[in-house]
Image (cartoon, rainbow, N blue to C red; front, side, top):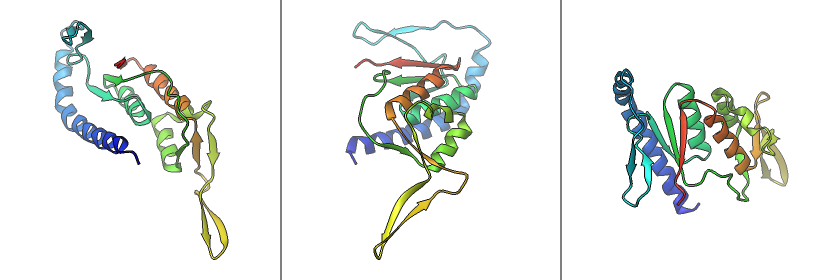
Length: 178
């Protein structure tokens, strides 16, 4: 596994933990401040580019709009959190990889209301996930009868997740354009 993916996972886990711990106190302060209207402020980043100041109108900032970031943004925005997603590039990712979501992931997508995002992403339903070879014999390990996994096209799936999250009123995104 590539070291930047491992580092990204560690950073994402740290950020998620920080958001969970920090957000409960922050949410109470924001509810109190919603009684007085505020303007959306712009701050210069020092290089002549003005960027929004998210501090007053955002509960959660998520860095990265991949599968996990987009799903988290959708779930939080659906629950009423004001979510802002920062992503380097919001165009459909164009990469050739084999992506697969095991049955547990598909069940979680359904619980979040995101299972329709797999539709139209050239996804394939998979009912078993491994072939076991022992003593010249081969057998598949099947999922329980009510469950299945899905193989999918990463870019199309991610775009559908992003579109579904963006359909919620408490969601916003900001491309970094680096």
